[in-house]
Each structure stands twice: as C-alpha cells, then as structure tokens.
Length: 160
Image (cartoon, rainbow, N blue to C red; front, top):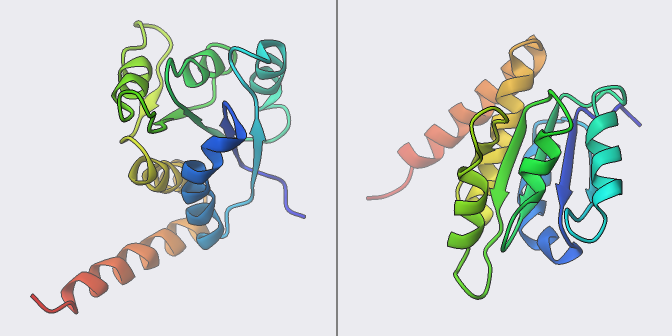
C-alpha cells in the first residue's frame, strides 16, 4: 500500500458522509490518503499526537472536517506546519454556518484554508490538496490537468 500523502480527519464518524467526497477526489486522482476520527473535544490528546506526527509519517496535507464549534481544523493546524484545509460540516442547528464561521475566523498566526460548507467543500478540499501536491509531482499535475479538461468537456457537451 502506498504511503499516504493526505490525512483526512473528522470529529465524528457521522462526518464521513461529507468527508468521503474528499476521499473520492483523492482516489480518482490516485493520491494515497488515510482517514481517522480524532475529536478536538473528546480525544484532544489523540488529535495532537496525530497532527504533531503527521509530517514525520509522510503526510503533506491534512483535510479536516468538523461541524458545530468546529475546532478540529484549527487545533490540528496549531500542531503542524503542514497545510490544513478545513471543511465545515453541515450542522442541524445552523446548516453549517456555525462550522464555517468557527473555521474561517482563525486568529492571525495559525492559518487554516477554509472551503465551502458540506459536500462541495469536501470535493474542493480533495482537489486543493491535489493542487498543493502537484506543485512537486509532474505525474499528478498531469492527472489533475486531465481531470479539469474532462470536467470542462462535460460542461461544454451539456445541452443548454
């Protein structure tokens, strides 16, 4: 099994419904990844251990999905120099707006790249992780270029 380059983390297993969209994008682009549940509130020591050791384990990007208070992406970013991409998971109470604001309002000094709420954000997190990795991987850059060309063609071929 290839060494994972992207870590997908989420606060609970119910977040997988959203985060699997990032996993599908990575799979489609042949990017090895791992996925874990590491709650910022229920398992903070596990989260810190995961994020602090991510680079040493060979990860190059972390995609972190969280709902509600959504502390996971920011807390992960505080323990690693790797890029962390935050995906706000849609919540029942506020439809993910609470998640979005929690992630996007990180204080200056510890950045988290924040994507859209829900599935669209997870898809784009996978694609953004691919773009980051493609800066040092010509084969991946070619696969990403082909993906975009296919996407463009599918839109151009659609009836109006």
